[in-house]
Image 1: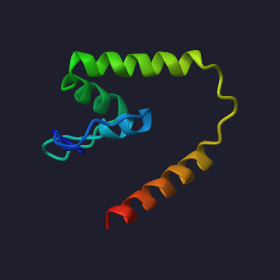
Image 2: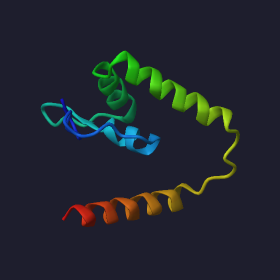
Image 3: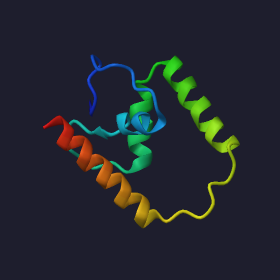
Image 4: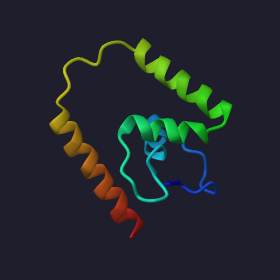
Length: 90
């Protein structure tokens, strides 16, 4: 399996970047569902990284209900942020 980030990259500081770092491909290119990706990625995380993700998760839950979410709009926003980030790299 190959992680989308290099171990030489600086440690990421926010939750959205942590989620991006979980994106995993199987060695043979076999598609994995989200649950499988998370399980495979977490196997390679250190205990410290897992605890940090747990704290982020708990903090998010404790912050309360986010209200109604428009997932179509959220995906559009995420795709736009990704497009801008890719342009910045090029």
